[in-house]
Image (cartoon, rainbow, N blue to C red; front, side):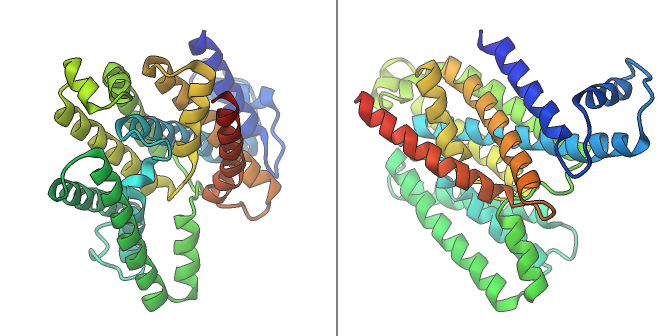
Length: 331
């Protein structure tokens, strides 16, 4: 069964990832600290280890898992909805818009301090998605129009981001912004965990409820309509869902690529093409993948962690290449 095995794999991955770092913490101590904090036991542990696990490593690992699951879900939706195997959460230009919003706040100080970089990223992401919807509507409204509008939006907002960074930021600001844009899980806290857990869980429920519609979309909009699917309404609902998910994830962790592109393909290879199985499989694979990439980024490149977006690209590109070769071999 996918359920128990998936939960076990994810729990083990998070547990082992939490033990890794400059200060060694055993898996047994991690277990004891968790049980203490949920009031099931009162086992004596070192205060330093408790702080490392509960305040630093565990929130970071859980945020990584939520980001991987959410980005994977977005990729699975977009690849079926747009019938494009190369679609991922950034095809809508949401990531570029989030980057622009964060840079406008961080470098130019727009908003008078009312919004931080995360808030600016969320607003920018939604603004970019609005631009994509308008462009797609005025150019015909089909799936190809959405893809082309996303490409145009991505390029425009990327250009604005580069203009602001290189035209107005000093060296320290440029370094900080660029590190964030590459994806960073530094300084994650429990409120970040709660936010992403709620958003990704709600998104997962909606995705599962839309599994039949996504199965139909994979064969084209005409087939979906013939099966009683309200094509326009379903497409807008799912596009809005992916935009909100991506905007929230990017606002917390920065731009993280290749998760939404690679993991849905891996889930289909392992579990078939029915979305009732692809959706939960992609979420779990994405979560496990991100936890391990983040752990490797912290440990291998210590004491300065590698931006997690760079880690996902370094792992994701070769994996995607192997998937393409395997797919051709089975063709």
